[in-house]
Length: 245
Image 1 (cartoon, rainbow, N blue to C red):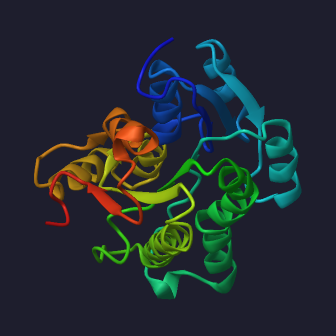
Image 2: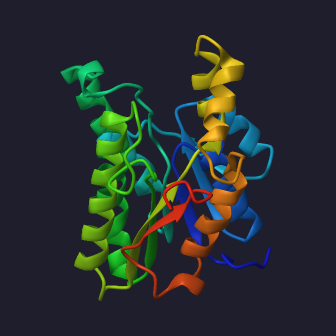
């Protein structure tokens, strides 16, 4: 299959649903050989049906990451989508919740980049894409204390990797979505006292009057994965329907 990512191998985390799934499918449509990873084997099975290669992967486990990467040493694109949205202010976030959010939202990217980067440097080519958020160092959002802190840290990690390896052919960028209609968001709305009101509230805070889609995020990911963006590195790219404007 020819396409903008023809000849590239892409590893996607949290690929079983939401932004990760949409991006894995978009990469494949553009000709990439995609390794879709997640802990959700049932979700991964639906990607096998789409012709993608899959692997169960716990991004909290450094040894498991090393094992998967050792079986797929040539990775041109790394898409870090794993993450968790904690609800509450800093007073609602105990030490255990704080540590868990940082371990998943930032630590997973740290571990994945450490595993994949040496191969990229050896080939003098690679694109690393981290899913951050508009709720970060970009915009303060109520009841997103630790989530925003982790995503701000992820932007900082992105910029550090970008500048440290700017002359080595490896690029690193962050995508910063606004409110996106995903199974994760649906779950948070369903858990609210009034799910319908929760959905209306999420939509109301978007200037465009609608939620984003996972496919819209995936289109930006394709650009960052492709050679079309070869002069783009260290960027925190908002795709939020003017939420942070």
